[in-house]
Amino acid sequence: MKHLLTLKEFSGGDILEIIQQGIKMKENKEDYFNLCKNKGLLLLFQKTSTRTNLSFQSAINQLGGYSVDLNWNSSNFSISPIQYEARYVSRNCDLIMARLKKHEDLKELAKYSSVPVINGCCEKYHPTQTLADVMTIYEYKQTFDGVTVTFVGVHNNVVNSLIIASLKLGFKLNLITPIINDDSWDDELMKEVKQSDLVQSFDNIEEVIQDTDFIYTDTWVDMEYFNNEEFVKEKDERINKMIKFQINKEILNNHKPLIMHDMPIHPGYEISEDIIESENSIIYQQAENRMHVEKALINFLLNS
Image 1 (cartoon, helix red, strand yellow):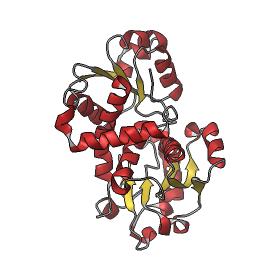
Image 2 (tube, one colour):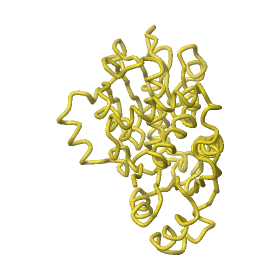
Image 3 (cartoon, rainbow, N blue to C red):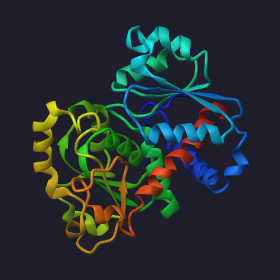
Image 4 (tube, rainbow, N blue to C red):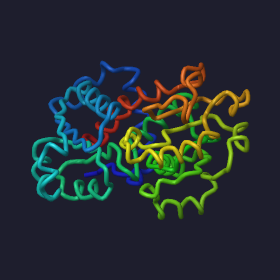
């Protein structure tokens, strides 16, 4: 039995198989309506969600299965050791997708679950988002050889999963990350980065924009803190430091890389509104691909 907690668990071949299958499922939806007939997916949420919730519900339904939505805070997960609840809930489903605050809790859930567990986002990794990202890149390029992705923003869970994908698939990843989320830092992963020339850090976009095929940004403030009154000072400090890295026409300087963002978007902060809606924006395609690649992932975990 295989889990997806970081993306480290999968080989480059596994990832390529999943994204190629996702593209087939996207192009021929009707061929897969009964692929996971009567299979149950438990959706366990400790954090709020739009794309993860909707895409996984849609994915399992389109495969002929069903989903059950369970809120961590209104369930007994909030008052009992994870090992006991995990043993119980995994007897009621075929697969668990968990969006939790702490990666250690995800590891505990997977340790005691009798069915595959998918990390739907935690403070360290966001592997299902990255699967959608690389599927989108592959749709445009049909290869990862010679492809350059530039990420501009805060070093966070999305960056970690992108780094793993880069090391496994072979595309070049430029990082412009003036701020690091301490909770997201993966020391072991960054040691791997030092041994590879695929992932490199830069101080500004001007150094890399000419050779960038895809430019990717993300929120500067995590969703649970964006409207938190206790986080106002930190939020203001981040905005003041990061505003010069906003993806806009001026910073792109007539270059036309494809624009990526994992959403939710905060226009006027990490990206200008005209760039969100520009002809080079593939943000909505990227978001849609969450559902398609998750169908392939579900099939991979249940039927491979």
